[in-house]
Length: 428
Image (tube, rainbow, N blue to C red; front, side, top):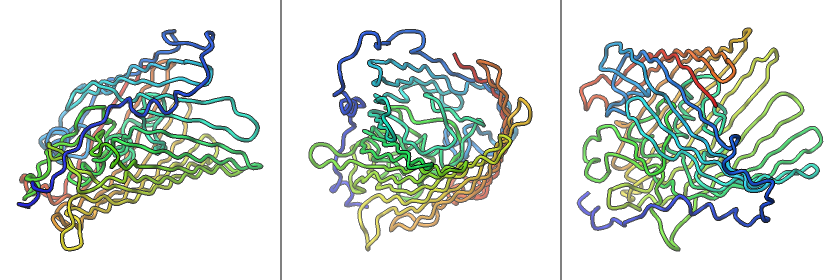
């Protein structure tokens, strides 16, 4: 690794507003459509929760724990602020608006910052075709579990491993266009986007492994990494900024994602998603944050089974690489996969949700091998009830995982955690 310092290339972060100009070419505002500071232009969403958890320290607290909260082995019970969001939804014209979300996230690390900020263009649909577009800092349309401008989990407190990772590391500044069409009784929707500022995606997934939590990456904030073993600490920063662009000028290569949704004339929806950040794995900045060439494919399914019962499933498989080539292999070459199935059914005024997850990573780089592999499963059961502006949720979550890096800090590679949460969610 002694030659690394001579080969580093310094990158730079890009401003979040750069992509917003993509949609500014729109007809002049009609005064009657301009709604900037009216009551309906604002939303406040927040939750408080009581958390009981055992097992190891959370990854947010310098450990390898998979959950948002952790302990030192004993059962720990304490109240927490969950997530609070202020949403501003200005409307400039009938078809052009914006979403700006400021978030406060409590728990092991309390943080406040910008979660989303994008323009949204949705003209009136004509005939069988419809067009829409977004541009700015946004969540890509991957998750089947989230909803709302604040991107909260719909039927539980904690999302799956897949959508936890989307929220924490797949956070681009994008220019996105979508086309919807009706072909007889079939409905299709195609979405494509070019994006920047997501060159480090894959860092957390490689060094920590998968996790299950409802925290998301905030603009200009960094995510902590667990203790780095061996020589890795000599060339990798102990943190990662998910919103970072390591290219500048004409050398920049934008990433892309694409999504296809098919709704046949039966209560089933099928989704396909492709992501490639096209980052250069040899790019690195002065803080030793690297470009990670990360790409993945995902398939999703939503099926209405009758009597209000709904089945959701997602499966994702991908690969991320970082560093220089050594003997035909990059320093880090991590293949990852995860899948879950979720079933929701109403019982009177209460909705019950159950989910099972499986996840794993497989490292075969020239510098990092199977000692960084991560594998495991989880099971979750949640109950939800709505009362006008309030929602009550109770969730029981168990995770079992194996990560050899735990031995570096004196823990057994195989760890289990159980977490019970009760939450009151408020919406104004």
